[in-house]
Length: 192
Image (cartoon, rainbow, N blue to C red):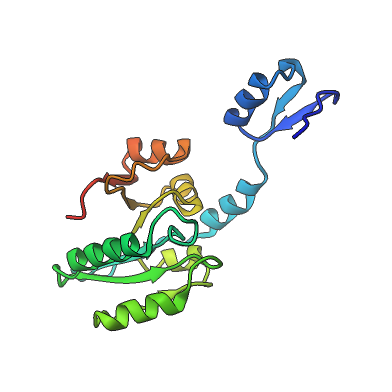
């Protein structure tokens, strides 16, 4: 791939890209750090997100967000099945916990999840194309895994999340690392 360095000004949307351009030999004086317009829309969604009003009960409402780990060839089907079995077995140990699943809108197969839950007699709603920000209002916390845009967006919005990383050691974005350090995200290395 050919890079051209002839422009008077290069717009760079974040510091990590700024460093990449410097390492590729771009002139620092010709780089302008702008931020990304992608985040404007996300900011508006979080700004308009009404706080969930906690019901006066002991129920813990969890939204599980999945990732296309098999579809992106990061996991085998057997590894996904192991993960989901362990996750649901641990969640089902506490009768106060209720949960729903939000699968990737494009890369995951809803039929797989329906059959998986049905085979294990697990009654959970599966969301796929619904708006994540509207769903967040109904839940106390999100559980997720892997490396996903959902993690970055939740970190940006200060949404509480349990991020499972069971010996996978996925590289996280800087914003996710900051959410872990600040306490919005709990980073867990064990299912329990």
